Length: 323
Length: 217
Image 1: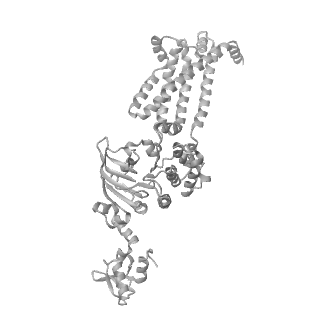
Image 2: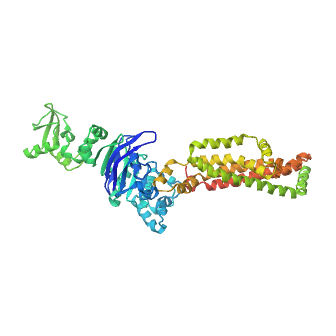
């Protein structure tokens, strides 16, 4: 859908924001661009709708070079959601959302139903909210309208520039869930800029990690945490997240300590032992193979805790901790 | 009571003169405001696009503003001579600054996030100007026009010194003939005009504040 071919961008002040990237974004995928500030993620995104022109290289959308397309026509077919929401305060929700269809020359009757549908989709009752003004809405509601506005012209591509980072944590979490839900219905190609790895892991189909104007790694969330390409990617994701993610998604590889109960009293019963560095796969093998219900976890030869078969089973079945 | 009676008599006696001069006064003031708007509004929009130039243009109009009004009329007489045009030009120069500055402040004060959203959505620059920037800064523009109007109606009394008539004529005649009632018969309409326009334009200013912005609590 979107292809970057050796794209570079040097700003007028000499800053090399993008030092040459090749990237292919597939149709219908939600792709997160992530990296530390100054890595070029926003620049990369803004080159897609020509808010920033690349210095060299080409960007193709659906096989067509966007350098040959008119900015305005291009942008009307690319939805755009920004961090600071940017709703027009002097227009009602209806007018805000209907602006692009109107600019595209559609009649009100044609897009009205679509607008209602989209508002319903993000949980805003059209009969209540259409005639209201943006400032009467909460931040979370405003950004829902922002998303609807981007979708109203039915563009195949939507760009989102840290759309949820200005919201409070609860609204942010809700909107991330809603976006993911929405995406299963609308199947747009979404390019999502974020600096929040949790957000990227949660909502993206593909994650593009950038650093200093270069792509470090492109991978699906699971692949990214399982096989970070280098030390930078690994540290950017963070050990905690890698562990937490692996625990959640591939319990077989979690360490036995993740289901261990610490020893509280003296050892009374004799159980077989397992080393604390072992993973759950090994523990499961031992327990089922030898028909054991509990095992001591030992570290440097000393027992430090105990694991039980029922907990192991729950964990492997994907339940959270606890019985 | 007698004083009031004398004043009333003066007005009745001179009503033709007063009405004629009031119309002259209004004509002069409005022509000046209109032309000042025609100059300042596009210029204000232009300099809001070229912020480096903005200080320069606003600076020039500010310098004009600091010239005492009587002196400005004086400067123009040797250049253009006396008459309506001279008064008109002086008044235009006076009205430029408030309108220009408010246009500039209003447009540059529009939230950049909103402009970026508009651009990113595929609005052309003229659509951004007419659908976003101007509606959002309209109350600012109106405030500038209001200031300029009140100022111009007042300063237009000096037009009489360059032979351009107006209510200043009535005042000046009164002064020359030591007729205080006549002075007041010229001064009071000027004050009323200024107050009246201030009131009307203030209402317009309020009405032009976009509805969605009034709710900001």
